[in-house]
Length: 272
Image 1: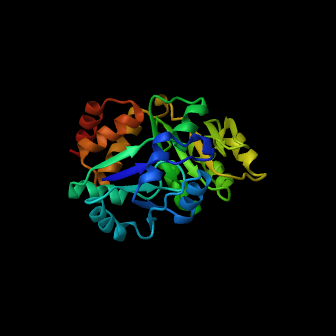
Image 2 (image 1 turned 45 degrees about the vertical axis):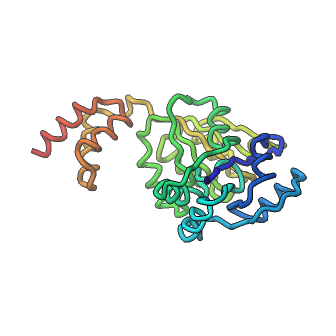
């Protein structure tokens, strides 16, 4: 079978007993970076030397079929450099291929930068969305953020040190200067830092430079920010983009709090 295993996001002490047992016995490990896996084995003083196969963003689609065939006869342990495979890391194509082929997929749960940042943020955790990394280009990034301006769920992003300052500035532009934002830096590591404030305040803070691995947690939009007519306009824009009217009404309802049925009927009336 395919076994997805979460590895520490910073603190080696977060390694679970199940992960150690898997590392000690796995015949094959598919790793995002085989060198990182070798260092993990050394740090845990594991003498077992499994077959290591590189599985990364550039080869996953080609390598997935091979790994699925291997998994028909022996277990394949899948590791990313940190956290859970498939979450903004390689693994999705492999799992999809395994599911299509009827090969069992299971997981060894463990550390997650997304959930850790969300938990310590102090922002609502009952409903949230993970948005991964924002686009590199400034125009694409701002367009993406503007499309999320009415998202009512708490949002979680990954960002690099080189782009965190402009990304926070764009969040202040797209979401409003007063939107609450939390930057979680170097989670579980010695120099862990949690910085809370408004989008504008954190944009100013980041101008001095921010190092390390970064997760950004952003407060969702208030329902009152989107009027019903504006929500109907959003539905019609989605429909013009190719989304079915029923699906568009449901999506906008989720983001704004307006009734899906009422949005559907209003948009249908406008369309004629």
